[in-house]
Image (tube, rainbow, N blue to C red; front, side):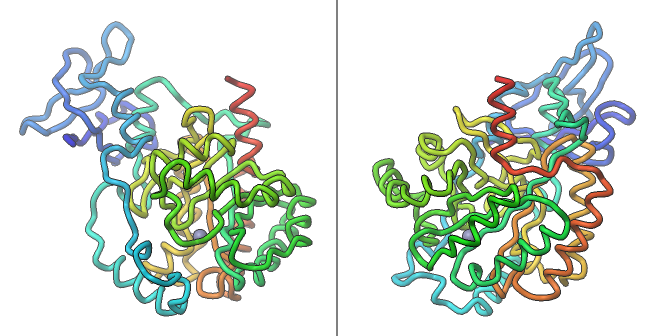
Length: 370
Ligand SMILES: [Zn+2]
């Protein structure tokens, strides 16, 4: 798919785009008027956004370009090789899986979307007049704390994260896999009592649900019906963030929100830190670096709060929604250094004054506004 790089003129565009580049999928002509943004695709510097009679005019279809990002149609759905293993890939020890993840991360080439920040979708939203930053209580941005409990090991250590949240008085959403380990129902009730939310992380963490046909996906959702009803589950996150348009379409029949699309990687992203609707379902992009991504990039847990804060400041400036995802598993966030990093982040992020909420509250608000 054709794309070009867009840069704002100095002093034009939002402050958070200063020194940043947006990738726009589509083709641009050129435009007359007071230049606001430019591209150099045809060699010479060409104005692609201009102010004409007090209005912004684009030399490309900004709405279509935003849709390409939100549907991730610029790429083929990433299909993890783990789908083809004859055994469940969690049978490979966590330490070894981390080594494999680190080797893959080291081979990654810089590309689109840029990590950890790619402002492309938000630059397009700005051009379309969507400003963001209007959250309850006059807050500038929202913050969602989420945890994916992938295994029995994660179930065992999940209460440690809830303890940290209780000390800070903040709610969180825990996503559970329903057919692989014994679910501690008392823990789920404690999460709800603390103002948190329970989401579904599929029946099996086999990375295959996204690639089933529609009846296959429906059947897997149906298999969890008892759990979904008992804990009033409204949200979904696909294992390993494997996603396809089919999966999101079918998920929308049962769930009011999904959080399976990151703004940037792994395997693509919508390049925006702002939730958006996919049909009737609210997509809440995962926007802070995941613990797994930091582990694969060999970042010491001592540096995690800095990585999260840097991105949180950008999201505050854009007026979007910061979504953190960590895993209580021993090899990710189930150890002392990771607990300290999480505790430190919660302490520091409060200074930015976010609306700390669970996704169902954002979905309810979006529905009200619609
Ligand atoms: Zn998972």
